[in-house]
Length: 129
Image (cartoon, rainbow, N blue to C red):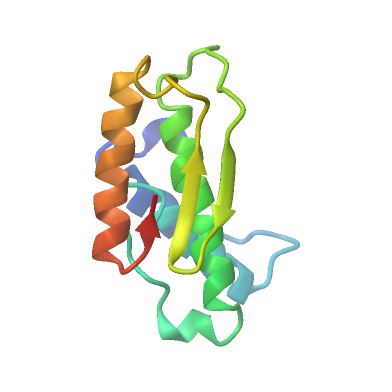
């Protein structure tokens, strides 16, 4: 089915499919939560809707969304390039990524993607350092 879905705005199509499919083993609330994360995994960051928020903690949604968004950036080229040891941590006002010295300067495309991601997160009120 994934081959038949339009590539443009695939995060929206994937979200729709997860939300409205019969998925044995998942409750409708869990499907709604997964659909929201999938819809949120690229481009503009959208906070979780209040209808889902009562079932899951907003912080769970936020950290899972941020982690998935970063994973997508790191695996964007689908290459076998090793990702260096990095540290991801929750800070008082958001999240922090720490890399080995010089690694980002050796990977300028990923660095540019991370700067764009930082802007998306900032628009949603989340600090990514």
